[in-house]
Length: 502
Ligand code: SF4
Image (tube, rainbow, N blue to C red):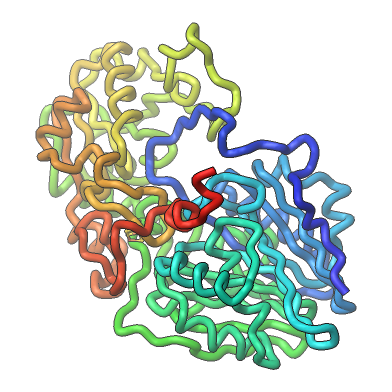
């Protein structure tokens, strides 16, 4: 029997819609989603999931959710718009309880920011006595979502959201295979795109990655129990240890008997998102055995060697995304480094509009320059990426207003010129400042004295990885998956539905 908090309306107090105006102070690429799963009878799994999601908050700030179950068959799901700390209170975690749990934080990569699209998705299907109930959390983006959705609707399958994750949940719930593992093995080859997924039934947790392994997923151990997470920083916070990355195309199943793995799909090539190394993943996470903080420092060192700034006398970072690379740049160039900005660490996005009076203050809500540090200086300003350029232009202006004599931008990634269809919110070339512009033209557009980007070769040297095993399509335009095309935007599924135009 299913007991669920899966209600048709968002909980009181968290009722936000996609139409509510927000002031988004982020100009970089938006993270996609974070997932977590744990099978640990004897532990407070809902609380562990809460703190794991807290560690993964950087991967999505629009909604958060946890599904938990006892092995006697109850699955409880709670999810809402907002940050992890806003969605869950102490009494929620007590009510969730359970022996196994999955969790999700979301930035909407498919479907708009509505409560219905928050996760974990909770589905059940099948006749009484042979009913499969599951909850699913997904990081990624299916590039064949429109086709699968229309095929399922023709078969009479109903949907309550416009997220591709519900498609996968529906396919697994309705699958006739006796075990969830066999259902996953049959469904995965039909999915195209990027997906790292955790699924729970009432007695087990399964995790699996797409055959190219575009989005990360790691396996951890807590005592004699196992857990799964998008990044290893989620293990650190709950006292678990990283065992290894789940392999591309691998299915890991965790239950009372421990852990079993099998390959459910093969690919001609791996294609881990190289942007995870540059920006998305937390610097204290490890991917492919590589410490991201150390890799980002090396990116800064290589950037200094490739593109020095001979007239500069001080290196500063755009906090926090440029911190590690700025330290590396300073190390390699021999220039001193200091903090040029103080950052308001509690601003990710605010739902309160600044109003006319404060509008011109713009980015000062997030960054405040320090005139005593930057005044009279010829600065190297290091950041990890530029997408739209609006924030970077304001940063350059603020530094000049604070007395900087020169501003030399150094970016520890190549120019972003192509959309991502694999779970990152960069959908059109037109939104990218580097699209159709030379580096010199971008520099002039941003008001900088000079601008230089790290080469793609430099990125791979810094991470110690092979290009043939990564995706770098937003830099190179070379998409690793067949069938990728530019109609596959975040809202493609919504746009294909009759209700979407209403
Ligand atoms: S296109 Fe860019 S952001 Fe998207 S998966 Fe590839 S490397 Fe990552």
